[in-house]
Amino acid sequence: MARITGIGGLFFRARDPKALSDWYDRHLLKRADPFNWQQDAGPTVFAPFNADSTYFAADRQYMLNLRVEGLDDLIAELSAAGIAVETRAEWDGDYGKFARIHDPEGNPIELWQPPPA
View 1: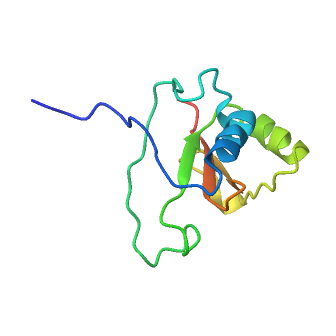
View 2 (view 1 turned 45 degrees about the vertical axis):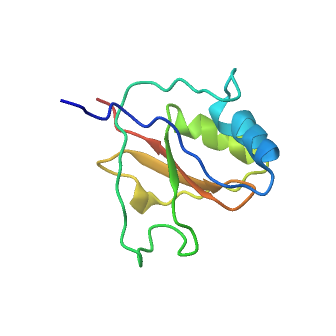
């Protein structure tokens, strides 16, 4: 029986693809290969939201969620680089810890540290 084994890629438009790719590499992915990123095993949520959801900005069709280890350290790194990081106590709980940033083109990125196993 055929089955999907994971997300093979995320593709989206950008005004300056090279600069945006460099930003993601410098601040988040830290890839050695500019086209591939080997992720650790773990959960991936695939969840369409209602069109009128307020979970992320109404003018955006998607929000990238990245699983993180060491969220507090990453928040410190991003803040030191001048990237605004939003956290809210109500976001944290049974599902782990969360923070939000935006890339240089305004795309929302949710940083998620799952709870300990």
